[in-house]
Length: 500
Image 1 (cartoon, rainbow, N blue to C red):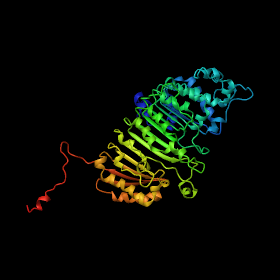
Image 2: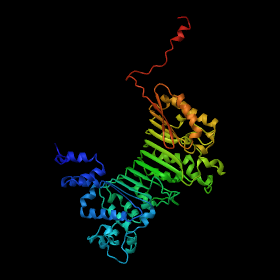
Image 3: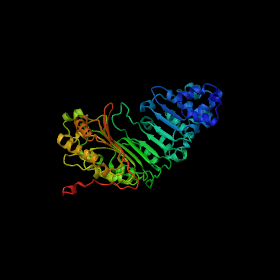
Image 4: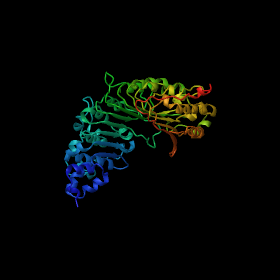
């Protein structure tokens, strides 16, 4: 019987690609041969989370010590992430008190290693900081986790993916200097995620955004995918004298974000080759929310048309989502709150001019309008190249056309588009209507639409989620014989009326 250790090295490495982290760890404890082969795989994807203890600092210190003693392992780390609440990064600092020697604190993992004292000094960090930035020893001691994380990241020369949560972004004072040197420190970096997709429990709104964390990514020559959360800055400007023209960035995802259309225009104008764009717009709506004039730069669609026009020649996938921030008034409270939701004026029409666009997910109010009499036909705003279309019910309960008479007219537009899809969207294969906040007012109309359009060549289904229902229409592709033109309906019966 062939043992695992008897496999050729190339076949053994291929086998390791299908194992889990727990299996890597088990194999590394088996024998010396498997320990040597499996250990590098344990370092491929490293994620460290700050908790209400000193374990985060200990893990960072042990990792830094490992990279110092076995520098070849640094090239094995291709994904690195730092997570945890902000207060856990600020507290639980393990720096020894009363001038106690660092090497006597075994918690650090640097026991009997004299390199620790020489590493955590301003001189060591100064190599990665601008000349005009001066840091004292006291500042380093008070931010030892920040210093450790910075020193670890500067050794990850083969890093492909970097993910940093809100807590570390707000805590770190060295991170802007690291991101400023992205191309030099991380020549293989392709994916960057800044922020938490789900907010912290004690965080009710999008926190302040440091533009020094956002701007360097748009100047990078290697990053292809960038995901982040952005709050509208007091004033947006590029750090360099010349605005970036990033030809490598092809995927941009903005989540939990609420920025003015002019700011979005500047971001998209810097990405001429963008292929995938996801924009999750989060709006605060409560009794203290400013009225319509103040929210207009965030909600009007003419500015969104102008911003998306910057990528109309390259965009292939577009997903737009509207959400309410956690501190907002819910749909059940809206009727009795006594305030009116500001209107979303205009129509999203720029998608019609995107020849490469194939997948679209968008709130239906951006097509059908906010007021009862403002509505367009789907074929007037959708490109003929689409293969997958998802219509969302975001903010429908707050608009006027959720009333039965206006609602039925808009659902009829969807029915007409489905029946005439061969003319207006011949490549369409999948249509979805996703109901979440407006299930009560739209559920019956969409269910009737599903029954009315269940025809030959159309498969319908309903997907039930925890808080949503998604109605799906899958269209079969009609196969035509090559070189044979499509014939119209026979009209021979017209001759029979004349007695022939």
